[in-house]
Length: 143
Image 1 (cartoon, rainbow, N blue to C red):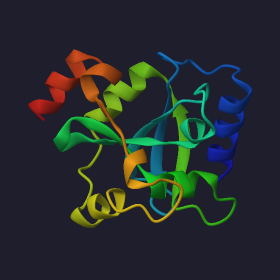
Image 2: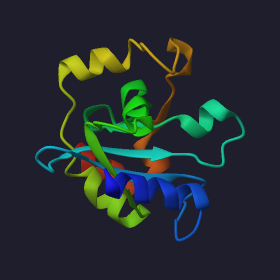
Image 3: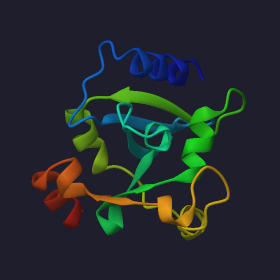
Image 4: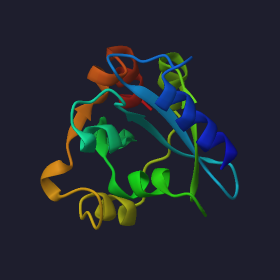
C-alpha cells in the first residue's frame, strides 16, 4: 500500500515521473504474494476528469491496453487494495509487457461489463504498438 501511495503521490505532483506522450506506466503486483498481475498506464494530464482517473491494462493476447474499471476502483481505494501500484518508466514497461500474465476469462468478462466508474462506451483500447512501440508488439506476438 505504501508503494502505491508513494507512486501515486509522485504522479500527482508530476515530479520525477517520466511520461511518454502523457502516459505514466504502472506495474501492478499482487498485494498478497507480490506476483506481477498487470501492466497499466494512466494519463494524469488528460483534459477530462474521467480521462485522468482511467487506468488502461495490458491484455497481451489481444495486443491492446484496455480501460479497466476494477483496476481504477482498486487504485482509488484507501484500504485493502488487491494490487500494489508501482510507477515504472517506459523502458521497464516494455520489459514487463513480456512477462504480464494473460488475464483469466473471468477478468476479461469483468473488464467488458463495467459495474463502477466506466460505462461500456468508456472502455476504450490502445494498441501495444502505439503505446510501447513496434518492437514490443512484435516480441509479444512471438511470446
